[in-house]
Length: 52
Image (tube, rainbow, N blue to C red; front, side, top):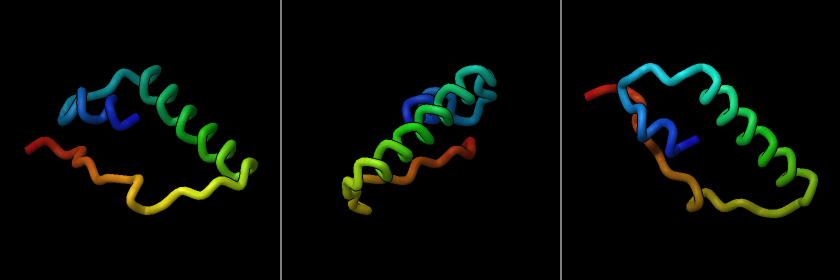
């Protein structure tokens, strides 16, 4: 999803790509919760989605 945001920064993202990316994030989160793994805050980073 981050790659999609970076690639299309400031532009409209095709809906099908956006839905796929969001679905993958949700699926990964569910797998993480089910697997009881730990994710540290350092594993995330901020990416601006507003065109400069």
